[in-house]
Image 1 (cartoon, rainbow, N blue to C red):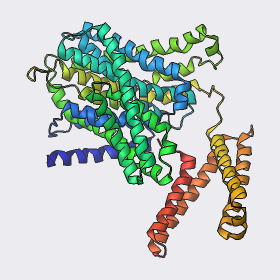
Image 2 (cartoon, rainbow, N blue to C red):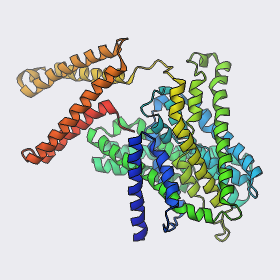
Image 3 (tube, helix red, strand yellow):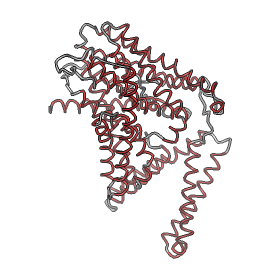
Image 4 (tube, one colour):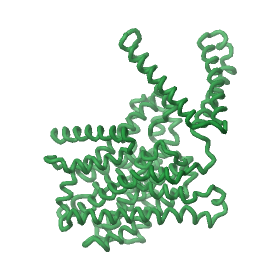
Length: 536
């Protein structure tokens, strides 16, 4: 056990170095993760690691889904609910069905149930991979919202397909009519359980005297509790986690009211999700030799060939689905035609951004080793896992590396009337400063005159309003150049970097307390976040 733990830690450290290399090369880190997973399988002498498939599903999927829901904007999600639903439900069922019939026809001994199982695994794209690839590129807000919303909901819909297909394989019986009714019941009641559980957590966070550490711990526990509660009643734990995550995200401003709590949670979740992504690919690397050895009558060449075929089908089906759903509703509805046309460039980016990732891999690894009788081996398990890895490898590496080139070639511009990010930030800051100044003028006017510190705060707000208004006016000028904004940001970031060095010098001089220095450092972090964002 100690040897395995040390091995995983060593591999995790090596993967971290690869991610740093990916950052230096400006390549999306999920691409390096899948390459690392493949590379680990070739390391001689690496011991095989046997994990309970149910544990993989339980440990990794609830927090991955909850984090995706947490960072989903409900307002944007609802605005683009039509294309999101058509992708998240329609494309998942379309892809699962075509893959089911295709694989059962071309793979000897592969049943329709196993085909639906594989289809449910490889049908959901990974928004993290797409967002990482597109980071820093000029991509319309509409496209990013649709991709993130699709990834959130299609994880849920594909996992429900996976669960039904798995039950069909294990029991040997399947009824489409019964499965359809069960699907809506299981999904609907999963949402009910998720919202009920989220309301309980809301009350705990909102009204009990929690601390930032306890709040962060509760948010880590919440997806597991929602998932297990729904599964206990044989409802969809996935839908419970997604719906609960969306509710808590929408109420976050009421629940987590201090900056310390939010910063603490951001650090906890960013680290946890990153490590989980890396661990899943390490696990597949450790299991790949055994998976290859267990392919049975299929050779590695057969597995690669089937994986390439399934990859080609999933990529092609996305194109075949995205273009019609982007334009046919516009032909049928005058109301929809009032929105700007997506043209051919937007659907091209959405189609090409269908990279598979960690959710598909974790789902494949969760397939049980044995049938319900605990004696018979699960049919073609190793082949399904191997094909899944090939699909992830092809889509991540091929599409992930070429997506930036496609974006640059099509020269896609913002098609919706959305204010630039800098203008939005400046406008928000201006509103906040005015609110604070109004409070002082109306409630603390005498204190502002008699208390030097309150007076300083008031004058500082007035100066901030003046400078922010000037900045907003400059951003609204038609001739403002992006390079001027970039230069402005560079100057501020350089100043913050120099101030951090000065804080380090102050720490060495031991004149100021570490607590005071940490607070000053936190303020620098918050100021920097105004420019760089959360990094998510």
